Image (cartoon, rainbow, N blue to C red; front, side, top):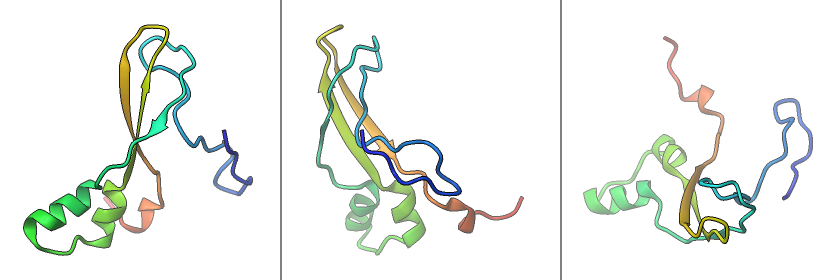
Amino acid sequence: MTETPATENAATPEIDTPQFCPWCGTPSPYRSEPHTPLWQRAAEETGQEAPEVLQESLETEAFFTGCAGCRRVSHVVGHHAGDHAAHSTPG
């Protein structure tokens, strides 16, 4: 687990990868799984450049593990929580 420096907005440590099986809770090491981001696939299919806000919203990381406890294979997709306040509209 890698911790980020304490800042005004971030008081909790950042985790590089998931650490436990989501089904049974057994500690389980995850491996990173390379993939094409959704925004990139959509841009290739339409032949248009994806807007930056769409790229930020659909940027993900993928991980997988095989659990020794319950013997299930798990695939986890993580989204980064960014500064979306700049992109939101007042409601």
